[in-house]
Length: 168
Image (cartoon, rainbow, N blue to C red):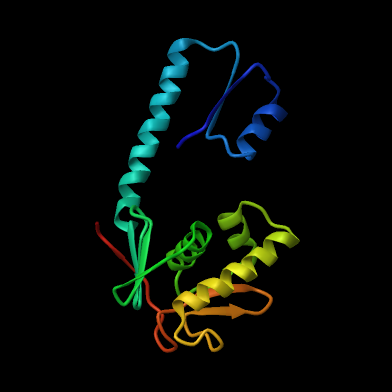
């Protein structure tokens, strides 16, 4: 969902801050009705084109794991996995970049939205729970690997990590 800030604050610092905290557009008062409608139209067009490109990534497969983003469902070898929302977000992030190490800071920002000591503890706990649901032997992980001092990596098996988008 695009976010547009409509504000009476006109300084460059205000505009930059608004865009840095996540807004897609910033419009300072006074503005014309026509400009507002045109900017909304541009955001809708941008959303449509990015949505069309991401449709082919609605279902992700990595080895025996399947993740259906649109239905918020996951399974391993056809067996449904009962994941919490946070576990699902973490798995989605890792499956989207399967067979590459995802830095811990990136995971914390994408899954929890912030990076601090508490979030690192939350990552460890979520990873522990996710391994119990995904791994045949959670004490000897084959799918979810920790790369000490760097981050996490999801592989399809010990030999050949692959990820493939499945058209919906």
